[in-house]
Length: 134
Image 1 (cartoon, one colour):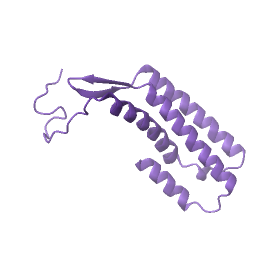
Image 2 (cartoon, rainbow, N blue to C red):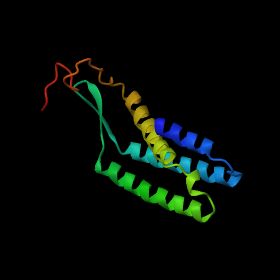
Image 3 (cartoon, one colour):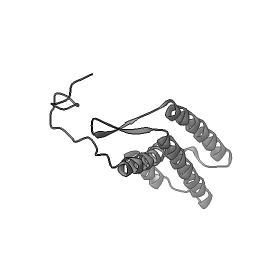
């Protein structure tokens, strides 16, 4: 959300964009969100020790590489058609991709009925006081 917000702020600061520019920007945002959602569908969401976990798979990394290549190609196409390079904030591209991923993983996590891991106030370990490293 933060990267998406920064990207939108960068666009807000950019003056002189036309309707065609906004169409390219919108299409790029939709494409980035779709690739993020596809990447999110490859993430393994499972229950372990009574709480929800997620794990990236080989397919997740492959999907990330495919989306990177596609988005670079889309950016080159946009530039070739006259969209200014500073009208395509990198933060926005990354942000919408992670947003698409989070929407899919979040939906799957909530649909599972498995509780999320509780937060612990223990500052010595992220695993909490009753968990050991294995």
